[in-house]
Amino acid sequence: MDNKVKAHIRGLGGKLAEVVIVKYENNNHVVAEYDGELHPAVFNPFVWAYYVDDTLPTHI
Image 1 (tube, rainbow, N blue to C red):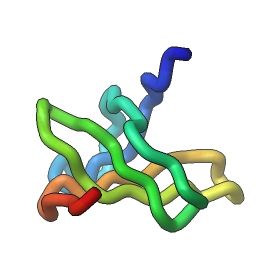
Image 2 (cartoon, rainbow, N blue to C red):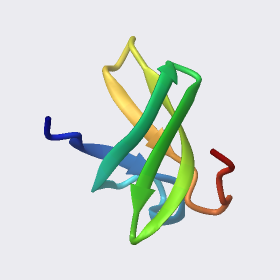
Image 3 (spheres, rainbow, N blue to C red):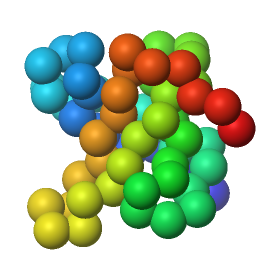
């Protein structure tokens, strides 16, 4: 299963970049790998997009 998606990255001012979804519990509890590191993310079903906060590390 290919978990690569385009996501809005906080550190890039919301621009899109490719990330890998590592863990998905629900829309508010997502872990994404971006730039070789794991970060918290959320999925917004209204705009059908992931948002990754690359300024924070995640705890799996």
